[in-house]
Length: 414
Length: 112
Image 1: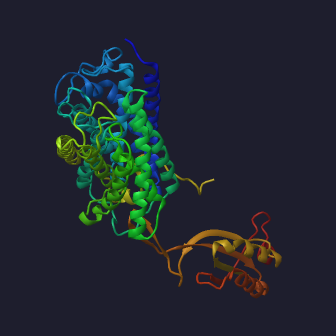
Image 2 (image 1 turned 180 degrees about the vertical axis):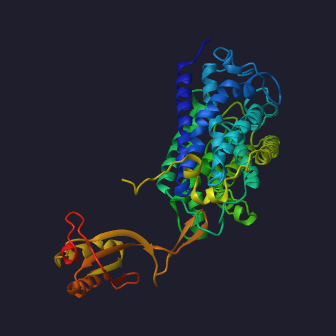
Image 3 (image 1 turned 30 degrees about the vertical axis):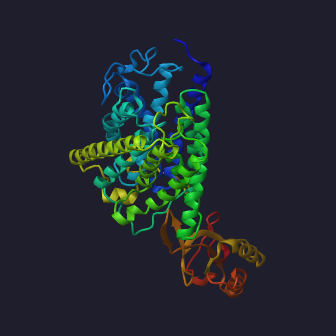
């Protein structure tokens, strides 16, 4: 097989960049919870690197990318069989197929980790482990197959998703909604204050996410070329615009520009640009980012209105940001940026064909994952002794102590 | 013997410590506390949600003194810790029945 060393080197680096986003996400979320639960949040994230990597290599890569089925893959690549020298059907890449598998693995790892933000402070660790094991197979693999595999029905329809606006963000976001509806609210929410215990952690995490996202988006060009460069620029500009959008909205509505707002805003922009990254150009990332920053800021207060405890705003940022980006792609997609774009966006004179495909992809992902995730947690809650939620007493004491027998900050001990 | 307790603003600690040392007092215990008196708390905002934080960080200073030294040490503490703004804190005196120096076993005033 002939590989392009530049393309391969870039995707190798991107694989490492995306891997780094999982500990980055752990810090981003970890800083936002109360100190008695910091380890639990870090653990829920970092454990995905352990568990999901293994699941991916053994079976989930195959289910996502093997075969020519429209709805799901098959077991051709079970146990990495043939992966060294066989591409997923329809993909003719200039990088080693094994690298493609490894790069995609990092996406599969971080997607369930995203959900952890919604279940903060109250889910049993064992329930979390069981949940993500099932979810990655039942919800991640199919949606990844539909959108990323050339055989998948959404790919065939012409829906565009450069790096995973649907597969990662909408998928995790809507799953989070299903889980919190079964899990219930934290004790004392929303009346007792539960402010972040370490915004320095959160800021470090946000910085790592922005850095890693260059690998997430620009790496999805699967080549070291102009599209990758465009994706990198779009990623950066969208984060910048979204940060400002969120801060302006926040300053106007509640009187201060906050560090949490800056961190949240930039992430919202990165989420929104994810599906668009290699398909748009010019000033589009600024518009997409700004819209995402403002809309996600407004969206995080929906939980108070509707009474669901999405503790760290996975729904407000990832579901809403993912929808914003996936739909705006229907407006801004530009074939001059990427020849893969056959139906231009509305603003580029292409009419509504692409927009309709995007709507179909968004709705399909939402309905499929919401229903299946709800079923998974509903059944787990009935089947596990005591349910998926910790006891009231354990919730008061804190998860670090009760789930992991550890203390995050043993500062008073010498 | 008496225990003088002061709840003061944290940034006043260095001034208070220096003043108390100048008076010849040999020892001091300091702890980080939080509380409120007439000084209200404050509001913090996280992602649009407002939190009323009632407690304010303070420092608790404790000094063991002989009965004869109470007035001048307490007065000095009050003067040094004062800023004139709300939240300056309070000083009070607690009677102490007995005290020991751990290293030597000395009791009473010899323990101070």
